[in-house]
Length: 249
Image (spheres, rainbow, N blue to C red):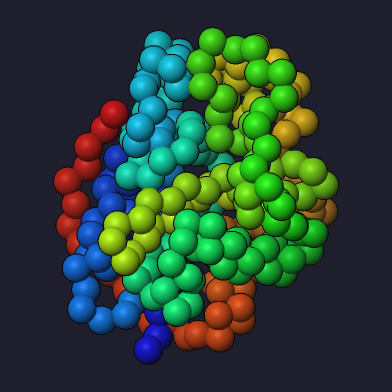
């Protein structure tokens, strides 16, 4: 059976997170084996927080409000991510025969497809072998997601290029992640109260740093759609998402 492909444009952060949550609920209630892959963007710079984070520990809300950065909660776990100049992916599935039935099993399979997409763009991405905590973290709040890699997240030349988070519900999972094109290191440092901006620059990178010319959104989407089709030997049909009721942090 073909997988479902949803290709959205730029939406506000609350709507993006509500759609991903609604798709997980839809897949979890499905009586048939289904997989949805969604790509989307963000209408405004947005800090997304893991569902268990506290705003006061994760971000400087005053700075975000003063600088036009929205704050939303994700339906998944993990740490704070600044979404801006990027392409975001989401994979929602109840197909354990394809993805396995563990968190790391899901991560590895999705990341292997994403890795092929980066290589389609000429970027030598690899999977991080293990989770690594941020070195010398001396800040007041939680470190942001991109400050260190988790197992099977993607890296290029030792720097993290994809930040992903997951939620499992019974036999289904949602995994979504940020694939930055460029980073606003200053905004991320200030939004997360990170004193050492150079730490962020050492640990993370946007894909534009590894190519001669910046790819368009169309080129990015085509590269990753083709990667999923090739890696999983599947075809896509166009899918849709249900109406949602956005909730902000």
